[in-house]
Length: 387
Ligand code: GLA
Image 1 (cartoon, rainbow, N blue to C red):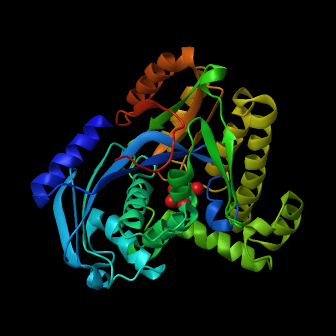
Image 2 (spheres, rainbow, N blue to C red; image 1 turned 90 degrees about the horizontal axis):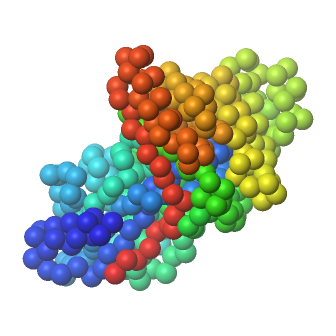
């Protein structure tokens, strides 16, 4: 983190020749449980992680927005009034530009606010399913809200980030990632009801229970703007419509026999995943409260099985990572995030960490898969102004 801050500060000076007005940062997230439930108005339980995106920002005396980063040579400069023209076409810069655009759609008067320079650095791995994009959106949203004195709440800023991602970047994702990034707390998960948008902080206590949360990043690339993610969302919407409910949140386990009778097999299994996953989120929250984190392993495993068999969004690398972690001492493991690649998580006794790391490296090599990255993450605080 000190390095990231120094890097963006230096780059900001080199690019603008000025001092910055402030530094803001926001974390990536791991979803503990509740997958593909957010856009079905369901329940999720993510937490913010100790990997962050840092934004150095400074107001300009014109009406341009300029974005640059330490991870791309591509800098973009455009009048705030013309953001619409580059919608979906600015590569990585779509995320910060999309946030400025979405603030305009959410009440900010882009003709009245000052232009801005944004310089971004990040140590959230890209493509691992850890929401590097939401980390950028949340850090930029908080920075612009401060610089432009908009006074939006954190839940409002989460909606701004989602709007940027849905309408500017063009990925039909839900509200979970931005909420985790903006509302996360150290050593706790964010229990979010995506229907009411109410949140509650749920203590995790991994370290106190002698547990570590490992990320098992397969390195398999995924993209949510296209392909499977969009298709799954469409199946869920079709299932809800066929069953006469507004969203799949309106169904419970008791509705599954009727769903099986009325839906084709594939749509039924998509629906069953979402309905049972909502229940598993409730069960995990209750287990955390009553018995502590050592009690949630079987629920994590059941979530993975449901995504593998019913929702069909796992890949062989994710299944192998999960199985190998469980065979080598993890108490629960599941893929996390949108699927079709990215990472799995394994809740692991501290003394099993190195055995699991070695076993996963070995298993991937044996199967001819590219070397995975296995590393611990700590439930951490959400977005903040750092200076
Ligand atoms: C991605 C999306 C989220 C959510 C998950 C699946 O991370 O950005 O909104 O839908 O996939 O749970």
